[in-house]
Length: 320
Image 1 (cartoon, rainbow, N blue to C red):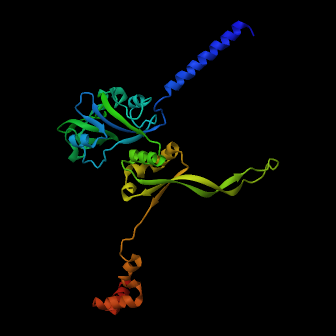
Image 2 (image 1 turned 180 degrees about the horizontal axis):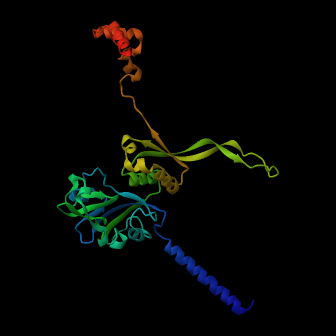
């Protein structure tokens, strides 16, 4: 190898080292895939309208604290689209304790306002109770709101109510969330608007696994054997509130799969507990009806001053 070739190789090695150092610097701070707990408040850029907040004081000031939602810090996974991409970009590379603000342009927030999505429709297509400006309505399967209504015609805007608005986020990164149960609880709260009781356990489970067939036997039937494997499981206590949650009822499979993928467990098991009502059980309730025994029925009829023979005669007459 000539001196010139050696010098060229050394230069390439130096370039590679420099690139490695730059990559290491770029990887500092929070990265995609990290769980973080954040506080934020977002207003339209003109400051007139609240878009979203985790601050209970802001919610109270804006009069939205009575909507059944709990306002508190939110756990998200960076890079998973849990918040606007522009906010995620600001968070990547930051550290817990950092704060800042970022403006999301309208086209990246709720879209530009499209005049073609404002249509005139017959008021007959709208429920009578919703025929007023500002009412949220559904017309021909589209969700919109009434901008004006005159006589039998209504102007319905099918754009998002915040279309055309730039949105300004003020945020603070509270902590990086490493505890997996806390991660799972935060995700469930984000998807369902409620934080369920949950825990993670590793169970031994028996399952059927396929056995490799004999390569020389082309007609061999598939065979299985029972094998004990370990399954890491998120156990979830289903409350009545969760059972009736619309998001859960419509998307439990997708939500469960998201938890499995993002927490790195094997399965999610939802447990439902039915507590006794202190009424003596169904047997006691039926006992109040005489237990449906023949003797008890006769006693019940006597107590009610009803002649059993008369009832039989009436039934036989009806059959004839």
